[in-house]
Every structure is written in structure tokens, then in C-alpha cells.
Image 1 (cartoon, rainbow, N blue to C red):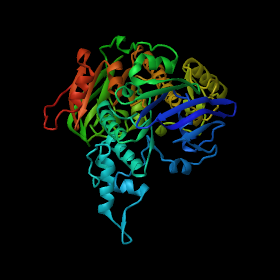
Image 2 (cartoon, rainbow, N blue to C red):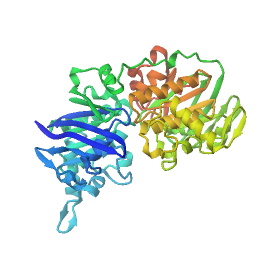
Image 3 (tube, one colour):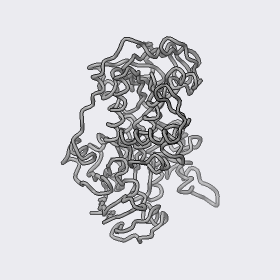
Image 4 (tube, rainbow, N blue to C red):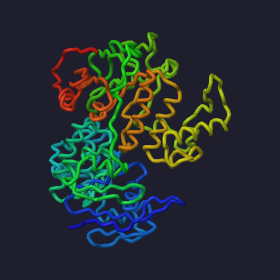
Length: 503
């Protein structure tokens, strides 16, 4: 039986069609995946359900009761619809119970806050997901998956009947995502219905009941998950079968581009030594909190270890001095694009922030030449919408924004590319474009360090991978050893493991 129906939803922004008569149905006690490429219309559909945007046509009904065409976020809230986004809106310094109660209210007794009753109420909501978390625990001590569970518990505490999960697993490694999936299945069994928005196709199998795919503002298909396979979903999203990745076929040279020796500090408790060669993609991976992100920050020039040394093509580079890294030929592509883009500036200005580009060894500060070069890159790499060089960057989808960060980095002709969770929130077609661009760089001898918590990405793209857990480097894997089973096992190595490893 349906709890939510959206019928014939239409939306235009000026002359651009965002949604063209989309139908969507959510059943009781169902996890329904909503998939589609960047710009397919998922976010617009969710905003209309939330009352943040108004549809130009169509109807929405919850439990058979229609929402008005001009319904507000408050109307959606009163109807039992809740939203959990990538930005969870939690405070690390507060306890789980306090984070939940800040939004849903504290229990009171005789005019005073009853902390014990509040804690019991939050514990009951956590129990609905079989989470086993202590309401008194500080959120800052939790894993990312556990934080998502807290955000869902907060929604359940507000009497949620429908919970929309908008890309909440984008930054989770596979084992943590599995932890979250178990919690969602438990909540589903107790009657909660979920809309699960994701770009990670693999995780819908075993978690979701049905899937709906959007493309170009239209509903492509809706089907039961156990009736389809990954290839079918990819074909629905991109319009054709998925191409095979070719990154590992690139030959790796003997030249050591970057060498890190004896780096230790912060969460990394034992010295880490590694190198990456010309044309090689080296994965740096682990669970959130393992130290892999801190190691990536050292390699990016954003932070300093307590000890250690770093050389690029044999020359010493100072930690924590970003300009030194750039002079040495290092470019960074972060996964958190909000820290690297200028949303209100144009696409062209984001591609060439210095307003200077290099061509035939001549510095050309010409605005006209810059615009011409930007349009050529946009066309060559299929950035959408076409001819967007003078549009504000914020008008582009997240996947296209990420593609522009890649282009900005490779236009500097780097010798080393350091990528930090670079495809989080990017759809399957957009990922292929980014990987193709990455392979073009390794083919010309660029060394790549791919710091990623996405184990599937590491397996598909990397020649080698080092795995961190508990602040220690647990293993260096390559060839037939580089499998999901080994990555998961090494990422969960027990804390009493003390042997140092080097690559």
C-alpha cells in the first residue's frame, strides 16, 4: 500500500526543463532508491516534496491526502516527511541525546528538563534501528555511519513516517555503509518508509526494495531491485552499457615522483613510508578516522606531521606550505568541492582563477582568449550545460562542478595529482568522464595519489593501495591481492597489531 504518491510533477527554470511529468510512489515499510545522473532531476523532485520549490504541475498525496500545490516545508513536516542530508547538522561537542533534543525538544518534569527521560526516549529511537549507541556518547566520538544513524534517529524522534536520505552514504567506506544499511533495514521492519537518494549503485542491492531512475527530468524506469542487475541500472542512468575502465592498463614507470619517509603525527601513530611512480595510481584508503585523510592532508601541503620528509622528483618539499607543493608540480582535487570552488563566480573564472593561462610558453592575460579556452574545455569534456563559461558555477550540478575542479588541476600540467575522495556525490557517467581524464594524465607520466574511502573505486582504478587502520599502515596491496575482501579485512585489523610496514 502506498504512503506517498507524486504524479505528473513538472518544473521549469526559465527555458530549462527540470522535470517533465515525473511519477514516483513510495510504499509502506519500503526503502525505495532514487537514482539518476547529475542534473537528472532528483534534487528538484526532493525540493518540491519538501515544499522548498513549487511544482509547475502535478500532484502529491501522503496517505491518500493531497498536499496543496503551494505546500510549505511546515506542511511537509506535519505530514510526517523528514529529510537527512549529507550535511547532517550535528554538533560534535554535544551528546547524542542533546543533538536529537535540540531539534525535537527535551522531556520536561515540573518545568525543568528531565535529562533521564530525554535519554530514554532517544535510546528507544536508536533501538528502532538496532543501533546500540549510548545516548550520552558525544557525537564527535562516533564514526560517520553512526552520525548518520543519529540523524535518522532525530528524524524518527520527530514522528517521521517518511525519511528522505539524500546522499548520506557518499563519503562512507563500504564497511561503514553496511553498518548503516543494517540500521535502515531494522527501521524499515518497524514501519518507517525511506527514499534513498544515492550515486553508489552497488549499495542498493541488498538494501532497497525498488528503484526509480530519472534522466533529463523524466522517469526512465521503476522496478523491483531483485528483478534487475547493475548493468541494467547503469544503462537506465547513462543510456548505454557501461564501458570497462582502462586505468590499470597504463604502464608504470621506474621514476619515483614522490617519496614520503617516516611521517608520523596526529592520529597516525606509527611512521608511514611510501612512494608513487610516474604513471602510477596509488590508493590511500581506510575507514573514516583511520588516518588516511590526515595522511592525504600532509601530501596536499595542507597540514604538517610531527616528523618525516617529503621529496618530489628528488627535491625536498616543506610540509604545510601549499605554494611549495604547487611549485613542485603538485595539484589537488578535493572531494569537498565547497572548499575549492567560488560558487558565485563564473565557470570561466573558476577554471582560470588567476586570469592567466599558459600557451606556447607565452603568458596570455587576455579575457577573450580565456573565454575561448574555457569554452573549448567545456565542449571537449562535455561539461553541462554547453556554453556555460559565463554562468555562475552554482548553477551547475555537483558532478559538473567536480569535473571543472579536475580540469582546473590538469590545466596546470601537474607532475603529481592528489585526489581526496574526488568522486563523492558524482554519478556513474560523471565518474567515467573523470576517470578518463585521470587516465589521460597517467599516460603522460603524471603520478596520482587517490585517497578514497570508496573501496570499489580503489580496486577499479589503483595499481597499488595502502590501507590504514587505527592510525597505522596495515598493508600494501597490489595485483590479485587488491580485492574488496582484503581491503575490508585490513581496514578492520585489531588495534594490538604493532608491526610496521613500508612500501
